[in-house]
Image 1 (cartoon, protein in one colour):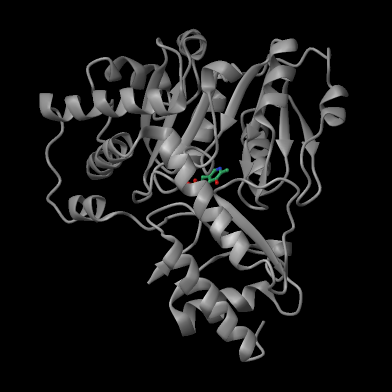
Image 2 (tube, rainbow, N blue to C red; image 1 turned 180 degrees about the horizontal axis):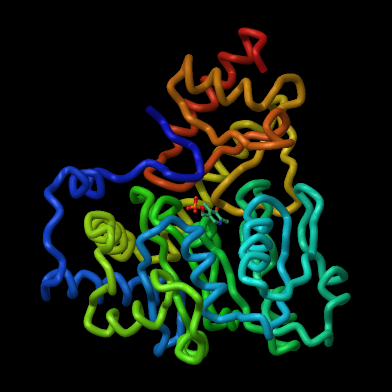
Length: 357
Ligand SMILES: *Cc1c(COP(=O)(O)O)cnc(C)c1O
């Protein structure tokens, strides 16, 4: 199997070996040590401030999105949401459910966020800004520097879902003034799904301690307090946290976040070069290194996904809803190589010869 989806992605051998081991009991100093190291490496890779904290939630990325929103905003806030696809829409839904006043900046598929769009909301008393910095559903990466400047100028709390962008695209939490960022275990961390990670700046930590969300499991105060001793309030996905530990150490040993981002960027560039004469259009104005969205000119995108899966044992990422027939995506995160890119391109060329592309 060769997996080019955007999560779960392929894991390295060490991570898979840990997955086959017995799961240890976790209220121990040994497990706490792993959690402290996980926290320190996440802070380092996100380039968070010295007093930042990290919470590891057992739940997929959406759990972290909801936890983040309800722990820092309430009905007295007024937030702006960049809605460029299904993940932006998820923030809208979360705000609706929790009655947080919001305005959407709705983007057409594949379009980037522009300064003119932001300018409309300048000086309008918004208190927060919610963005999926890489809208994975359409493969559009928004400009973090432009967003950062707008939020600093307007004194807005900046909450960034970087689930599919973390490690794949350059990101400096402190420099950008990002108050809170979140990611998940099954994207570029290349572990099984089940853990989401929230990095809170010192400012965000203070904010969390001032609020009481209407939820027991996702109350981050408990997670932060327990985290001071390397523990979690409830039984976490212990095995995945051990896998994350191995993976973070692996990244550190190979040169840290810069080296990992460079590796993903070069895989993406290699793939984009190899397919440049094939019958595809790239339907994104601004791509992340994590994903290449492709619009096939002659055939259904969903059919390509099915044929690759059933006849070549290669997985790419199909799109849902209105985009299913139009777009599929090729991921560049996880344990992939340029040889793997060649295998995928050869399969596509074979399909072309068979009249299927
Ligand atoms: C993958 C992803 C999520 C999380 O989805 P889950 O299925 O809940 O893990 C959220 N936001 C973005 C931008 C993503 O790419």
